[in-house]
Structures are given as C-alpha cells and as structure tokens.
Image (tube, rainbow, N blue to C red; front, side, top):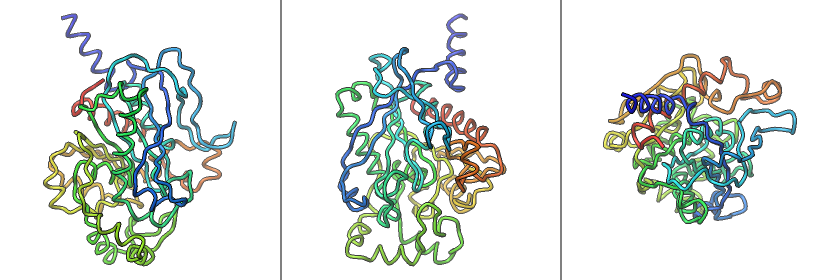
Length: 357
C-alpha cells in the first residue's frame, strides 16, 4: 500500500510539474546545418542551440525575461547559466522549435516547466527566421529545413562531452509553436508538399497562413518568385525529402501552422503519437485549415481547443510595458491559463509516450 501511495504521488506530481521543482541550468552550443548558410543573412552554416536541463540544487538562476533591464516586455522565467547538472542520470529529451520570427527564449515559459519536471530540452533559433538576427526571404519560406536544425542541434548536444552523457535518446520527443508546430509534426516523418500549400494559398489568399506575417511581411507572389530564383530553386527540389528525426517517439504542437503543406496521405500514414493544443480564436493559424486538419488526418492524435484564445497568446506572458509597446500583446484573454493548459497537457502527454523522468 505504501509503495502504491508513493507511486500515485509521483505521478500526480509529474503531471502537475510541482513535485519535481528542479533548478534549471542553461547552456549554449553551436550546431552546423549546411542549409543554414542559404537562410542566414550572413550565410553562416551555424545554428544557435539552447539546452535547458535539471541543475544542481545550489545553482543560481538568473532572469530570462525579455526587454530592457528593470522593465521587461515579456515574462519568461529563470535559469542558471552553465550550472552543473543535477546528477549523472540520463534523462528523456524534448526538442523544441519556436514560431515564425521567434526565439527559443520567447517560448521558455513552456520549456522551463518541462525541465523542472525532469526533462532535458534542446531548442534552436532557426537561421534567417528568428528575432535575434536579420530575417531573410529564404529563412521565411524554407520551412521544410526547420527539422534539420533540430536534428543538427540534437547531434551537437549528443556529442558535447558535458551534455551528451545526460541524454536518454531512447526517449526522444519534439515540440513546437506555430511554424514550430509544423516542424514538430514534420520531424515525425509527415511528408511535405510545398505545391499543395501554394495551391491552397492561391485559392485562399486571405487565410492567415497565406497572408503577410507581422514579423516579416512577404506576399504569396514574392514567395513564389523567390522559390523560382537560382538560389532557392535547388533547395525547393529537396522540400519533399524525408525530414524525420531518427528516434522521435512523440510530438506536441502548439497552434500549429503551415499544415496545408502536408500531404494528407502522409499524415494518415504517420504512426507517431501527436498532441495538439490551439486557440479557437486564432486568425494567424486558423484551426479549420491547420490544427483541426492535422487532428482529422493523424491516426494517433489528441486535440485540446481553448475558447477565445488567439495565436499570440501562446507567446511569453506580456508585462504591462509589453502591452503598451508590443502589438502582439493586445490579445483579449489572460495568457497564463492558456500557458498552464499547454504545460499540463504536454507533461501528461510526454509521460505517456516517452516516459516521465
């Protein structure tokens, strides 16, 4: 009876994220992906990687909030730079992909609770499509190369002598927001069909995914012209390649976008468990043409829909200064309950699919 009680307490704590309040360590490494040179404004082959992990109890965490010192725009959380690992155990790993024009840090509201529950999270800043670098046309439209950034980051972390020994790669998951949700599903092996997305946008030019994005406005005509350019046409020829990441056992997608770029038959053949959470008031990645489409076609999927929640509600929580200064902070509902719903769903989902730490 005592053993059963302890097990139940552990499970409940794992699902809520409260019983295993690990300190979080943060390390930055560099990965190499040849396609990054096409997307990056400076033609670098490198990908910035952030690794968050359970740290030693005496680790000193520092704020990761985004914005001017003393007056942040977004509340993110905290982590201890280059802290020692909590122990020598190998822990399950979750790869993470940010949204269009975002950053790994912007989504730390989601990743840090996973780490406090015992997972290691490996996140990237996608070249040419992140908030820390100059955005590029190639970075905006070569979305099929995003899983390659995650694969490169995983390889770099595995080969790092300080990080690799702590990774249990037999228990590997992937997650992402918006374009990162597309990335997570593509990483499971869902087949990409760019021509299908083009046809969809030709027929539905006012769909949120087909409209110019706030972070880097490009029209459908500009994107099509770029894809025919001598620089990008050879890359487009590889868009339908296999973009799966070896070993991924589960994917969690937050407000997934670009779902019309998936071949429906490929989604239906995807045997990987996928969980999707979205807001039903999302005009950027409209559920009827994105998340609900994936949920309809994927054979092993669970879907949670949050009433009244918009796309940018899934960014880090805006401070009052952020609401006053940042256009995407003008959403109509409180962000924290939506964040907690995503965290709770992800912890339960990954515990079932890749195992609790």
